[in-house]
Amino acid sequence: MTIRPPRIRLITFSVLFVATLSSCAGTPTISNTVQVKHIGNEVKNPTATNSKLVGGGGKDWARTVICKKDGSCAIFGYGIKSWGESTDYFAAMESPAQQLLWARSYGGTNKDVLSTATTSPNGGYLLIGTSESLFFTAMKVIGPNRPPRPFVLNIDAAGNPLWAETVDSDVQEFLGVRATRDGNYILAGFTFSEESASGKGRGIAITKISPEGEVIWAYRYDIGFTAYGRDIAIDQDGSLTVLGGLKRDKDVKQEILLLKLTKDGDIISAQSYAGETHLIPHCLSLDEGRGFSFAGASKSTEGKTDSIWFRGAADGSLTTSVIYEGPQGSQIFSSNQGFDNDWVLAGRIGDGKKALADGFAMLVTSNGNVKAFLAISGEGNDEVMSVSRLSAGKYRLFGDTENFQAKDMDMFEIDWVPDTATVQSTFSQGTLKVVVSGAEVSRKAMTPTIRHVGASLLEVRTLMINQAMP
Figure 1 (tube, rainbow, N blue to C red):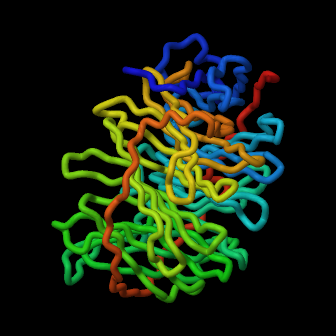
Figure 2 (figure 1 turned 60 degrees about the vertical axis):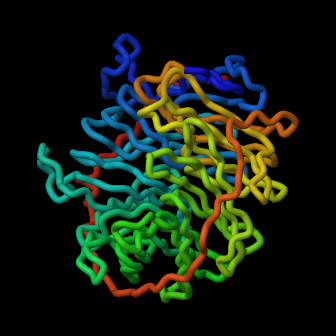
């Protein structure tokens, strides 16, 4: 593989097990030790510092990083046979000096796969994903609970679980979550398929829960053949903006949907964004000017994906629609408003199957022009899954990699200070042509069954920390 500049060398910041140091790569070894190794002058790119790996002996996947103004950051992902016999949620907290304060894994007897996390009004975090664990019995049952159902976990600022629950009906999966201004939470995802006038398809699931996890209201929103909610943002007045995807008919291309709701879930408006290819939404944010930004990918009929980024006004009209094209294709997984009206977009170049994937981050202007670009590449796969702002001009990148002494697949962190003097982007930039139109939405109430997970049935592992000073 040709390695694109700028290139970063990472060394291990690993949730490793002592036994793995002498075992061959790819052989999962389960333990409860977090080993941290800072890399010092191994970083070859001056704009990327404090690089490290986070992982165990199995496959460990990054999902979300959340940084505070003081520079402390919480990281979230999941590990496959790294800290337990199956797949478990993972969370850790770092001090402003990047010392690991605590690390924990959470799960049951089967697969528990994290999707994302958000801050809680109580100073902790709410984690969402799916679970196949049988949380209603203390027996070590081998057979999983299928299909997977939503699994919601609330932890405090020290990683201690406050409560956990599964959603056992109506909702198939939650993909996005935000804390509301009144101290509750809004979750966005999709329902199980149901028969409708357009055929059998899914609907968007939006649920509001209390700080204790009780359902306040839950609705299914139907638009055409099938639809799903991917991310959610909450405006200053408490209104909700839901990013999703929809197909008006099973034979047409997928469109992106922006659904605006009141704080109580009443429909304000719905607009779709259709192009000549399938449009795949990944992330949504509201900017300080009361507009919106969302990103994802454009997928051709041949299967090639290219990164797309949109900005728009509060009424849903677009001010920017950009496509970033390259020979290997790409996708944007995270977008975050930066400093001085800039935005940071991050994701993956290549698909990791037909061609090796590289991680990337780029700083763009408000109209999408690239000001700075960072590539993370090696002989294996890399991707950046999440970005969070640190101090002025600095960003924390969080992703996963098979490179740089990783044990199978590890999570990684990088602090990036974009250099706008030299731009070495691998993309060619163009305007993506889309048609914006209104969408008819219907709503009906749901009564999802909530199963609270008893403390004795949730396996919480407090991971030991072994970290060297940088």
